[in-house]
Length: 416
Image (cartoon, rainbow, N blue to C red; front, side):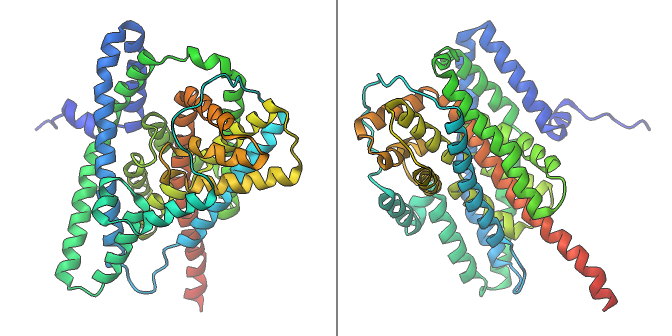
């Protein structure tokens, strides 16, 4: 009996997701060029896709972290500490890179935009206070508002408490985690359709003509982000794994960065990153915590945005900057970036805080924020792609380094 060939639906369900996303990207660009009304209407597909990712991500984090800790074997290593070190050092290195490139290629702004009515945080204390308030948030409120710090705290607390529960309870938690993971996989398979809608509507409604007046600023911003993605991050991965980092770097940019670029949401990309970690057979106890945590504190792209736009304002106003102040700006930008997810408006609203280091008044700083919103079509997309892909990159690097170390130790133990 002849073997029946798989149907169209089966081919779509099991085909290469990256290739399908590229097809969706090309079709979205084509639709925006052919028919602007149709492209705007197609934006509903993108909105539904991003909404579905954002809806499932908080539940995924809660169930996955809770299940991992509940079923965690005593004495097993989770590798969270070295990942945290990479997160913090990587964010600071990104800010420092932005300082160097901003001095090599200084940018100036046309500060003619009126001040906006949004209110930035008044200082680092307020940013840190926001993070602390996120930690003690009501669990239902945390789930409704996608407060991942609060979700993580409750998931860890419930996980430790349920470790003393019955085997039936542990099995139920594990089954619930598996069920939510299955729903996430279904949602991710719709990524090509979602990205088709996002690309079509974005090109049809905004275009890129307004970005030309800020071409140099964008080149500095994107140059910093590409430099971190292709030089700084690979160097950190090489130091961690002691092997060629670029296959892993390109895989993370391709499978995580591309999706994050179009969704422009680290939170929405959490399910994508977790699915990629599962595909690479990484330790579940590790990535179930490190990925949502990275979406909150691993913000290399945000640190670059804060630094570059602040120094652009400094150069525009002719404010003198010494090396010590520049390094201090890197530290402040890294700290602000870690708190960016807890502040409405993200990294752009933390620019006035960094501008305060140079005595730049709030009225001018808010004009810089307005410039950030103008170039946000590219800035925010690239920033999110860098932030989100780096979460998977650092998690995979540490897990693979630990696996290699255990493999090297195994022959020694057998001989002993």
